[in-house]
Length: 166
Image 1 (tube, helix red, strand yellow):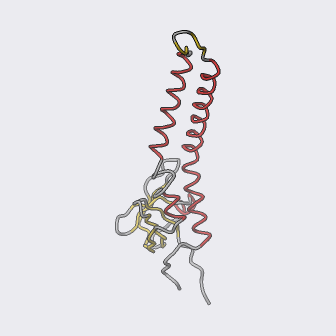
Image 2 (tube, helix red, strand yellow):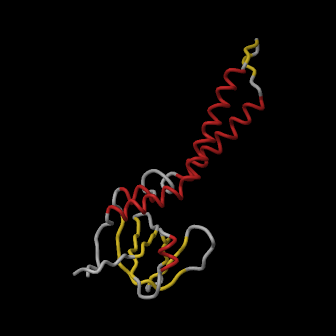
Image 3 (cartoon, rainbow, N blue to C red):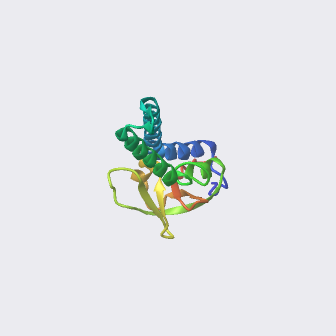
């Protein structure tokens, strides 16, 4: 029975990438929508400005909405870069194989919060986000976990599916 592996198998890698994408989806959609709103306010502001002898006159409401939506987009972008998307994000680390794998014995579960993330522990006391709810639900003492530690420090786990070899 093989009890080690150096890299995630293709189906495991796809499962981890899908999990990470689902977790970052809301942040990305919100950032894109607020960015589009900022762009629309800037276009409306440009179309609405009037030229007088003293210069251009802008609608102050449109300018304040544009500033607010631009600021929110910028904050969300800075907050997410390197964590939710971009270089050294969870998705980038898994995609580029910047992780270490360990096969460790399952030691326990963190309490059920009713929503993601679900956490499991190994016998060394390390805590990992469990990728699959059913893995978290059906894990028992003595089961083996595939523990993934990303280059950026985040930790994920999959329950090892043991196939009996003949």
